[in-house]
Image (tube, rainbow, N blue to C red; front, side, top):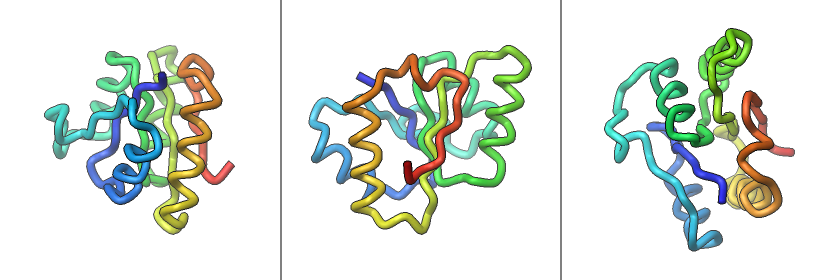
Length: 116
């Protein structure tokens, strides 16, 4: 099962829907992990150290820092970027598809923009 780290400002309606559709979901929020208000750089480092894919709405800074980590040869568990404007049901469907039809190793050093 793919393990997720949910960014601090991620829409929790999407997360709730995801938990309903994937009962054995392995997702932790940044807040629950003690990562409230940490920098994107530290968030990506924590996700990599704990082999989790970061799920975020942040189109501005997270991709830049993720690519910097990957290009520097540092670990990157992967990033799923969900645009804020993507309808909640579509965001849930897209994430369910990724969680059920792929393996976390496929996303190492990758940044994926939804929708697919």
